[in-house]
Amino acid sequence: MAAGRLYQGAVREGLAWKMVSWTDIGHLRPQQLTQAELARGPLIPYCFDLRTGTIIFCAGIDPTLAMAAEFHYDYLRTHARRFIEMPPQSFRSSEEAARAGSVLLFSPGRCGSTLLAKVIRAMGGVCISEPDFYSQFAYYAAHVGAVVPADRHLLEMARQVLVAPWRKSPSPVVLKMRSHANRAPTALLPAGADAAKVVFLMRRFEPWCESRMRAFGGMFRSHMDVYHRTLLALQQLQQNARCLLLDYDDMNSASPAWATHVAAFLGLTFDEASVRNVLDQDSQQGTPLAAEQLSRQITPELRNNIAAAWRASAPAQLLAAVGLSHYGSP
Image (cartoon, rainbow, N blue to C red; front, side):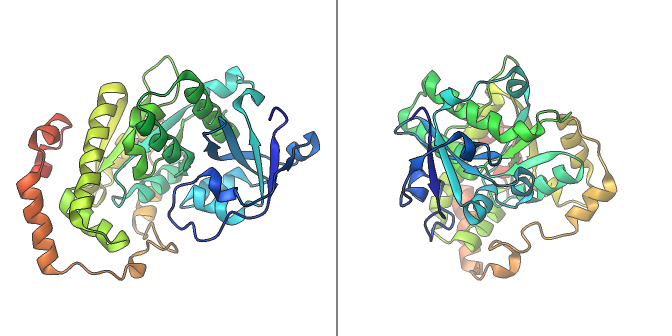
């Protein structure tokens, strides 16, 4: 494996919202990787093969176009036709690459994180929306309990390659997580002597649950479990990182003042005109999650059941601990 392997072809069909995995390209026949092939274009981390401790990269994809996509992993699935598998020992971590800053953006999903990503870009920042190898690593870390140094090195090398095109950026690269990342949030924090920075976006349970059910279906009690896990992730990150907590209601208010806090936290310049221009648009326009694409309806009876269930089981102490006591009241 020292020389790496090359896979040519498209990922398997029908993956939809599934998390990235080595099995996405498992149907492709590997070839020996040559230096000439390796030099053909930039590499973007796609996923891990955690059985062998290797990283699978997409090759020949423009990182700036992938960064601008609503869903980074989906853009790679759609456009990549060459995948390269290599162990992290193949990469020498330069001081410049190691210093390249990144901030993780967490949320339970369905609360404006895609909109926030666009606001960050509008203010001159770089935001990569859902590089899904983080979700894969979170599931792994939650399963094994404690990751070993070799695992952390694997994630750190993938992070460094991902943000490398912006290593000279004056502000950190924001990496927007999928909700899966809340299973093991602290395992995903970038290495460094200083406390990591994270942005955490939250929304009241009742409208969040309705939005999630419209998008993905399911029973509302299963969504309550997701929400509770999100609150625990927020608590862990507040204890282990410098955490900026944002409220979805503030993002929906008439004033974009909340964006000034984001700009200050990330070292960006607040541009009200650019921010308002983004806020006037449907952030999911053109995606399967656009408002007009969501055919499921929430009946008055279901809405009342969701509200009643939350009133009966809202974790008051946990909400208070993370600074969201008001989420427990009607």
